[in-house]
Length: 94
Image 1: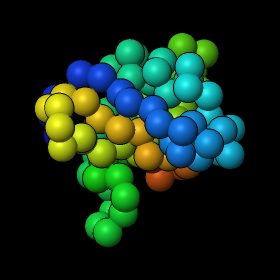
Image 2 (image 1 turned 180 degrees about the vertical axis):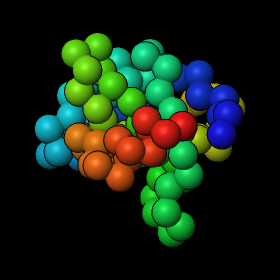
Image 3 (image 1 turned 45 degrees about the vertical axis):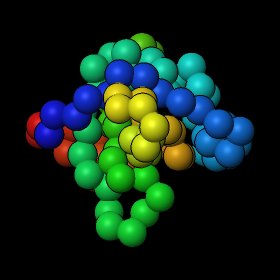
């Protein structure tokens, strides 16, 4: 799947959610800059897609995102966590 993801937006709520799962803003940005892979999220979730990939240290992360309505290419970070086996395996296969 090829998405136009040009920039990530973090609001206070997403920063809190990420921190509660042990994800730093820096790690999320590193995933973005390291050319992650994107997949659709499960239906009826706040985020429409998952951004999956490693940070510069090699740790794998799942970052949930949703495109903003007001600026194409700008995606709001909703949540994130260390990648689980399902997402790691998907990342390797794709």
